[in-house]
Length: 346
Figure 1 (cartoon, rainbow, N blue to C red):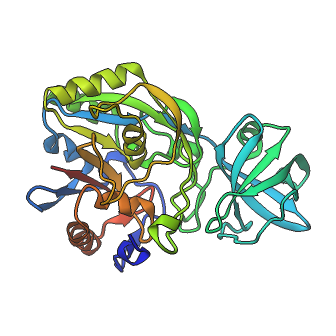
Figure 2 (tube, rainbow, N blue to C red):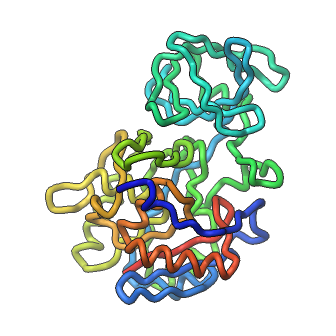
């Protein structure tokens, strides 16, 4: 897959702040069997799911993941992108203004993490460039930078937002295990009232955990050259059993978020059923690598040149996604983490 295949060239609007109500956002429904596209609101989800459907949700909770830092006289920001071990961390470099910073470190450079007053807190040593086409670096420190970020850091937010939302705006109904540095945003519109309606409809819910890293990086060349970010996941034994039971009963497995798809599609046995396990995933999906287990997907609206868009093509054809996105743009849907959602289902 080439980068050009991930360019829909659409003018779209971005959500610049959290919506007034979580479940009041729009819902773009894409039926892959009939190619029908419907425009609903998220409260209408209960009318789009079937009794026996199993929604698999991500119970990871977002933590502050942005810290100020400096090295060789340069000031910048680090986004924590993954804990590789007790003292090795994957970090993304950005300018203090939040813009992508492609400046290179040298191996063994010292990075100093500072507080809001630029007073030193901790030091780390650059050990490796994660991928030539990324802003990600592997850093080693005697300190736990995740603990430091929880105390001195801020939430990762981007320049298209009008202001920095409080951490509570990034928390989801299902989040119970801290560890994500960006919000599992497909879960955000779910409310207690909606969950009650879904249960009355006969819809089941089961959790997995996948701690998100920073957003999908742009695909700048061939798909094979795309940097794959490792993310830690865990599939509980009870969830694996419930998914296997649902599949045997011919019920649909609907992933709430691309994170859930990646976790579930990583851990399958030879019969295509999920295995209870934990570990790291570098799984990506595309038309050449479609899902073997997941039938449907609830997710946000995704940018051009991202692995998330390639994942959508593994559920629906590029032409159908493009047609649906064209309608969404014309109907004023909003993109990004506080924006509108889509449901892709058979």
